[in-house]
Image (cartoon, rainbow over all chains, first blue to last red; front, side, top):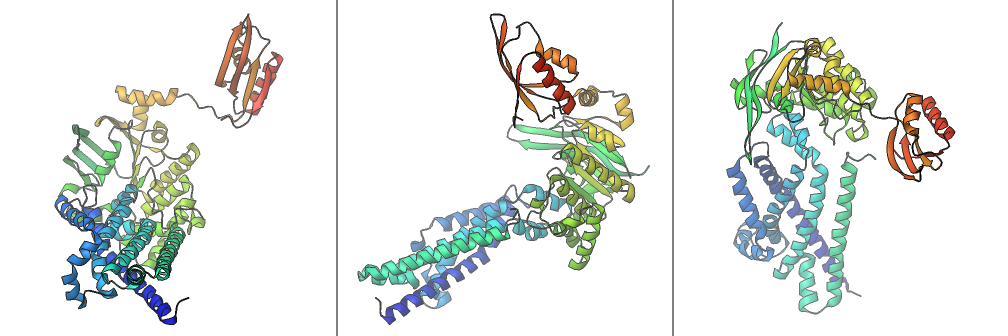
Length: 221
Length: 335
């Protein structure tokens, strides 16, 4: 039903979406994990309570999380231009995606790390483990299932945001859906691209959940 | 004897929503090298806080602790971490890494101490032999029983060759038989390696079985200390008496699995059937359900009884009830 140009455009769109989502997720985690760790450790019940640092990080995180993504996309476009050289296209979308995802990921990492049993942390302390050791060998290890589930959720959310960036020329499947489906009333293209987005999220979701079960040793297999 | 642990004027206050809470009030305690020292008290007496003060996991509000004559309060962070490698701890809920297998759990303190992965593994297998669990090396904690988990925790605690082992209610989550085997293991460790053991518990039985000395803690105060024989034969304070006599008069729990349902229909209301049966068979039964009333001088209704574990006595009871013209039927899975 589609000609080869349309098919290759949709194929390229899928790749662009994956590219934006994966790179943004990875970079979001590069920033989000340290943020989540810092939030966990400096909280009043954490390993190194520090209310000043906690409150500052908490505030920044909350502010960034409350700015609607499309507004953020416009707000950071000067920064995007500075980093990528242009403010449209897939690579450019990564900048606002990361800025939006990092605090969100930081919160998820924080909540995963806080699930770790206090008793195990205390046991590590009683063995003379330093704070860094406890973070590396206890918190991140014991919380890995929850972290992976969080990553699955983050991937889905970021994919959704990347599609939203399509309204402002963000590239990828969302862009195609808006340009062809919405502006040109080519409903079939919109349906196909939306369908592909759904499939992508579902595949990642199932993969993440399956993997998290495999690595979870708390369950008796 | 050499005092390996000295607690000097230790107080610990917590700030809560309703003001200050005094968890420990001016505690002074000396523990000799190679002792198995018990600290007993009701829940909320401050035992867990006290044991955490011994390795400064809780820093006392006042006073200090000396481990091998070294003042913990004067130590810097790094020295404290180093000190803790010589003072191991085991817990009520074992506190193992759930995502790591048995060997990796035992390797944990070794890796902290700078062992190479290979050496740590080798030592972990040796430790598993000591706690008699070598066949579970690659199991995960979720696959182990409570007793086995505590054995892993003990192996992990021994990994750094500690001088002192702190046990925080280490047997409280275990059944009586497993408790016995863990206590035997602790005793063996104390004997073979000369490790001083401090045991926190609320169970007098535990103290009686393995401790040489005991301290009694009540509402944050140390009320009595001494050798276990001394305190058992002549407890001086009322807290000590309460703990010791409580242990002796405790009613044994019914363990029988067999339950019967009996139906009264022909007996006189004035015949004490159950009491007579107990007197006849010289064993107690547990009344799980009773619904009887007097209808014109005759007893009517039903009861469910839990019979003693001993088969012979249980059978005798059923025979007795049948001879008194009661309908008797066994009910499955009532307890």
